[in-house]
Amino acid sequence: MPIVQIHLVEGRDDATVKACVKAVARTVHETLGAPLESIRVYATQVPAAHWAVGERTKDEPAAPARADAR
Image (cartoon, rainbow, N blue to C red; front, side):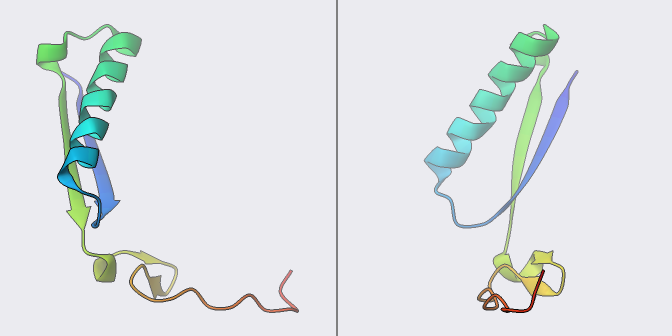
């Protein structure tokens, strides 16, 4: 039984997330040959303040690019 877990930053509407999990289930079915009834897909939406890239959380504005950064 394939289980697919998706983590996303919150903010997408339910219809968009629903379309995503259905498309993932279909793709797993088509690529692995697993019966659709055996595939589990779930999405967890995480608050932007709880998701960080480096030290910047997703609710913080991006820092301006530095001219000397390479």
